[in-house]
Amino acid sequence: MEKSFKNCQSCGMPLKKDPKGGSTNADGSKNVTYCSYCFESGKFLQPDVTAEEMQKFVKGKLKEMGFPGFLAGFFTMGIPKLERWKK
Image (cartoon, rainbow, N blue to C red; front, side, top):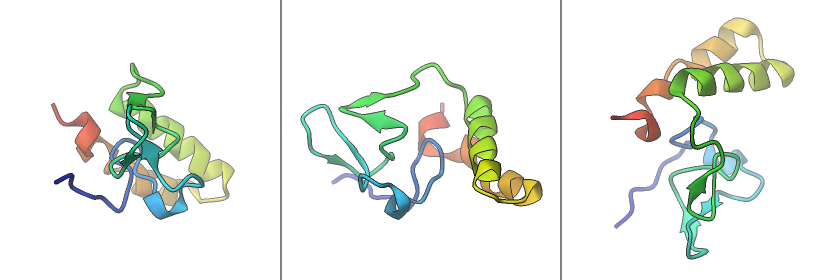
């Protein structure tokens, strides 16, 4: 049984905010771990990105959306602890 998450385990975005409602596995089935911005058809869209780069990227996106810097920093703090980044 696949564990289901509230947030994308790559970027931290709430999965309910994903316009596609989540990503897909290689066989076309629904993936409940990652959002469609990070993962599609069973593959990461940015396979070589690091947790730190993802943090910077997401922080920039949040600021673009009007979040204050300190809040963007707070929301991205947990990214390195997500499933994708666990070694």
